[in-house]
Image 1 (cartoon, rainbow, N blue to C red):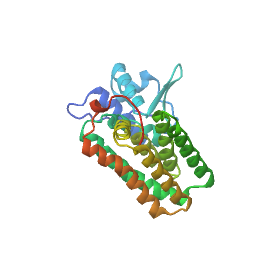
Image 2 (image 1 turned 30 degrees about the vertical axis):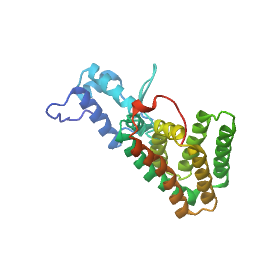
Image 3 (image 1 turned 135 degrees about the vertical axis):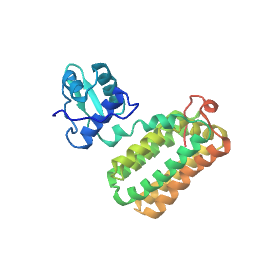
Image 4 (image 1 turned 90 degrees about the vertical axis):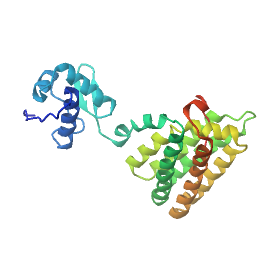
Length: 252
């Protein structure tokens, strides 16, 4: 890569310059997935920044899933796939303060309803078998003398992620995966406070599976939206926040 003139905006730090310029190099195609960055000394000169600022910018891009450092081998652009680049969304979803929980569940409802609709078009027998297996694990968790809500949550999460994966849209699947994994507090309170909540959720899961088996896109969307709407409404009604639920896990 040849040196280029870099315009620095007023108030922009050297670390910001590093982040912006590396992103620009990727967006322009001069750096692509799997490419190795120039050695630190050369890249610092090219960007007109100190080596310390370069390291800070690189660390920030590593946390964002844009770059990866390999011990003794340098710094590389990652695969830039959706799962990596969207993973920071999970932090936003963890900040479940008051109405924020319900707001995120609204986003999840919109995305998951569409995922069920798309999955109904594309899902195959092998994927349907995996969904069935996930629901059987959930049944087993609930059938214990003392229901295993942790195991139920694992199966529940797998079910929703499998539906999203069946859409053949990696970006949509990555968004849903981050939102599903971060709504645990809402689920645990609903499961513990509403008698029969997890059994109702399991019945809804089977209803969704049935529509997917029939490849009925319209009905799969409706069933999934109603399923997620239940916990969303509960979150709004009870003003769920991070301090009210502790760190337990259960299900929706």
